[in-house]
Length: 369
Image 1 (cartoon, helix red, strand yellow):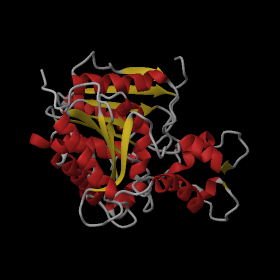
Image 2 (tube, helix red, strand yellow; image 1 turned 90 degrees about the horizontal axis):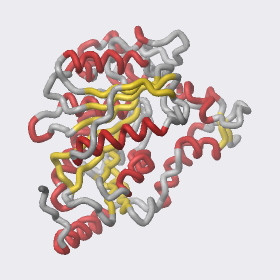
Image 3 (cartoon, helix red, strand yellow; image 1 turned 90 degrees about the vertical axis):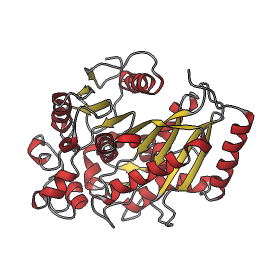
Image 4 (tube, one colour; image 1 turned 135 degrees about the horizontal axis):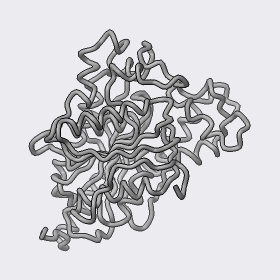
């Protein structure tokens, strides 16, 4: 049985550490600004609403989901309703520390948001869920993960961190991935002070963040090996992605300006070695930690086949992967609560040894399916 570290001394030490972190973190106002600034940046003509041409190309496939009243425009209210406004105060149960520097170089992308339960409900040290944001490697922010992690951390059973990394407007592969590794290194180095178990870390991400989570899972070994990873529709094979696109796909992944091409510094097919080094499917083996892979079979941005072939590859090597096919699901916006119940079950099983892991299944996107 794991010995509890929830002693008064340890609790005071954790609070002292948090006080130091808070001293260098941004105010709550900057948390709110992240989403508003993104909307204003996209609204090129300043009319207070977005048309498809103003939305980044890699997000246009989800335009109809944002345009809730179907008028052909996205106003700020519709934008916030889907993206979610990170709460400046996640609630009485969670302590949020934003803009924690993890690299010591002052770079604004080398920051993370740290979430800790104020009243842990299990003995410390706590397992940690590390969220990695999406955005096609060219947008997104570490604060994007606060909303994803808050409910999980509020249970008192997990700590959480949402990490930022440099984007393709300034670096190419492997720099974004190395940033993620460096953030994990910071977390492990401070695990004792924060009451975190460095051996029980699950990486979790959507789209580009799911790709990074899988790379960490298949690449990190030894003491840095993850306890698991959760991937929502992330790319897994950069050289094959365009050949797997559905007829109504909205991105030409082999084009020079595609997210993947920008990631490797030029057209994907002209940089095969670098593209392979950025493809999780190239590194799977039986020693990889357990994975949960979730993908909509009507995804027009990252083809469903990317996850399907990846799961087959990991199973062929003797690894463990649970695969949830979301019937009729696109690039996110899933509505079936059973999907998120599976996420919780995966975390409970692999981080706490409780219950059973979810099983592979085909689930409808609609609630109640």
